Length: 390
Image (cartoon, rainbow, N blue to C red):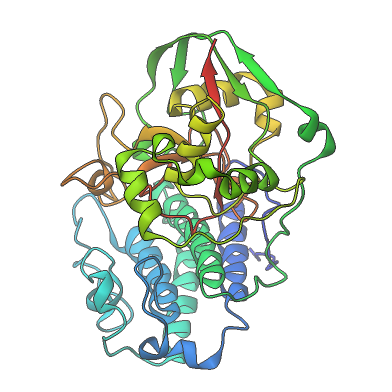
C-alpha cells in the first residue's frame, strides 16, 4: 500500500479518519505541513540557547522532537499493560528524558543538551515510518492512539504558527490566509435561541477527547447571541475610548492585567474579526456594550442547532465565560495530562474557547471541542462575540 504524500493546510474532511489508509495519509500530510511551518525559520533559532525565552512558546527543536516523541509513545509504546512505555524503548536514546513534556519543565527546555537538528528530524521521520508500518502491518486494532497523535500534531501545528506570530515572523504560504468576514455576516445582528434542555459534550465523531465526555444535559434560559464575532474596528473603538480605562468595565483581575500591560493601538479594519484579544479585554468590551460573553453551554448549543451560527465560526477562537472544568462524570483517559492538570487548581484558571481559528485544522473545528488558555493571554488567534439573556 502506498500513501500519497501531499501537504495539507486544512482541507481534509472534518472528522478524523478511522481506516488504515486514511490515517496513514493524514499522518504523512500533517507531518509535511508541520515541517513546512518552520522551513524558513532563522538558522540561529534552531539552537535553543539562541531562541527567545517566552513563557508561551517552546524552542523549535524541542517542540518538533516532542511531536515525534508523543507520536512514538502513544501510537507505538503505550499499552494497557505498560502505561509507562518502558517495555518498548524509544528509537532515540534519551528521548524520554528530553522530550516528554510531563517530565521536562518548560523553563528548562532552553538549557538542555540536545541531539543535532538533523538527528531530531531523522527521529521524527523514523517514528512516522514506524507508525505507518504498524498501520500497514495490522498492528492497530486500537485506533485511539493513532488518532490521538494525529490530533496532537494538529494542535502543535497551530502552536508553531502562534510562535511565529509571537516573534513577529511571517506565517508561511502553507498556512491558510486570514480572510475578511463575509459581507452578509457584517450585516447580521443576533440569533435568538429558545433555551431549554441542551445536550452537550461528546459528539458522534470517531474520536472525542476526555474533557468532552460524557454527554450531559444543561437547562438554558432563552438568550440572544451575536450572529458574528466582534470586528477589529468595533474593538478598536473600545480601546480608543475612555471606557477602556474605566475600572467599572473590568473585573478585579482584569484591571490588574490592564494596568500591567501596554495595549497597542487596535486594528481598525471593519471587515476583519478582532484578533489577539485577551479574555479580560473581551469581558470588559462585553460589559461596555451592556452584554456579556456567552457560556460554553450557550455557545455549543447555538453552534449545534443554528446553521447560521455554525457558518459564522472558525475565523478566531472565541472566549466563553466558562472556566475550564470537568464535565459531570469526567474520567481521564490514557493521556492523563491532557485535561486534568489544567482544571481550576491552585488558584490558576483557564477559560474555555470554542470554534477554531483560520489556522486551526478542520479536524478540530467542531462544537464540542474545548480549547483552554489562561485569561491574560492574547497570543492565540482569538476573539469573541457577545450574548444576553432575553
